[in-house]
Length: 66
Image (cartoon, rainbow, N blue to C red; front, top):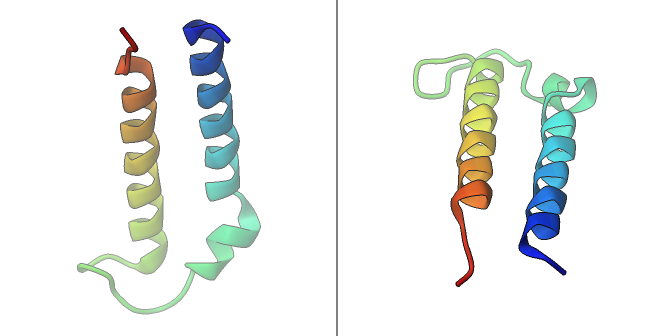
C-alpha cells in the first residue's frame, strides 16, 4: 500500500470521525447546564473535538515514512 493511499484513508477516517463528533445524538449528551473550564459543556466539546481533529489531520499529513 502506498503512502499516498494510506494518507487518504486516514484522512477519510478522520472526516467520518468528525461527522460523528458533530452529529446530533452525541452533541445532545453535552448540551447540559454547568461549566467546564468556564465554558458550557457543549462549547467545550465543540472546541476540544475541533482542536483534536485539526491536530490529528496535521499529524497524518505531516508524517512521512523514510
